[in-house]
Amino acid sequence: MKVLRLKKGKEESLDRFHPWVFSGALADCIPDGIEEGDIVGVEASDGRFIGVGHYQIGSIAVRILDFSDRTIDESFFAERLGEAFRLRQALGLQRPDNNAFRLVHGEGDFLPGLVVDIYGPTAVVQAHSPGMHYARRTIAAELIKIPGLGVENVYYKSETTLPFKARLDPRNDYIIGGYVGNEALENGLKFNIDWLRGQKTGFFVDQRDNRRLLQHYSCGRKVLNMFCYTGGFSVYAMRGGAELVHSVDSSEKAVTLTDANIALNFPGDGRHKSFAEDAFKFLDRMESGTYDLVVLDPPAFAKHRSALRNALRGYQKLNFKAMEKMAPGSILFTFSCSQAVSREQFRLAVFSAAAQSGRKIRILHQLTQPADHPVNIYHPEGEYLKGLVLYVE
Ligand code: SAH
Image (tube, rainbow, N blue to C red; front, side, top):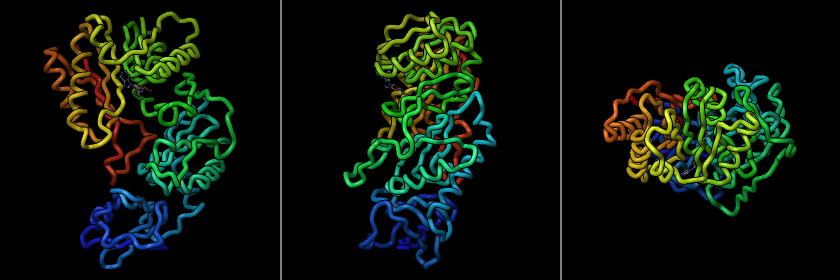
């Protein structure tokens, strides 16, 4: 195995099991013969071995797979994927009424650069690093071997998640099996998952627990689900007994997906309506008091730290526009999925919106990502989803 040496003192975060080696921490230039995606060893300046990981060009040079000198082969992936599934079993996520869940959440499952979502018999695999891209066939082969998981088809979807390099050629396609239908179950509700054309792996499994909480508050309410995508929150609100549910997304495709998922669960139910429209425009033309339960689940406003200021302003503006017009006694579910925005920063943006609206507002719940998106305690960056449930008087 080729080994990269760190500058003096740069082993500290790794000794605390943080799995990233930044390029600036490396003592020397990358020697000839080391290619992107290669498995490399990492050692401290005094030659002490630290771990083994995937090498990549960019600010994160190595993503550590294991803090020992072990071989990264089929048995490594079999072991890690097996551990990931055992955790999901402990969480009770594989049930007759629930077969959609995240099996692998990158660093949170000690597999940096890898995401695997399960939709019944199909696994959707996403590589975020060249190393995981090269390992995709091994990963797929090991996934179908996991006893009890029941995966028969593996769809690889990394065209948009890998750094652009022509040489990688990350074509979206089935690695094993093929299309056998796309209906999945979440807490007894049916969803069509469009992994072929949809965003991410086709569905935002990370809002499962928060959708269920919304259902709890839905009875008799007039619900606005802003940034609805596949209509997850809308379907739960319908089941919770909402008086009406309006879903909004700027994408026509998303609105079509939402309509289909509503029809799948509540055929012919006249309580639901959807709108293909920009969120800010919709909120501007919305009459005060129309809704008393609102969900704001926008896309990540800050994809990088450089966009932080604008992102915070965006969250403030969006939340203000909603708060200003919500009926008295309303409930607001508001989220940020930007990893670059901290929990405190998001709360501050929502606080500023509240102050600007002048309304009496209390925090009822502080929400996060569900347990199948675990956060490796040594890698706090893995915590990305933040939400607040507010009572607006
Ligand atoms: N709440 C969803 C996930 C939302 S993803 C769920 O639970 O599954 C973010 C969505 O916001 C995408 O579908 C995207 O099309 C939509 N979107 C992005 N910008 C928008 C805008 N300006 N107005 C309305 N929708 C927008």
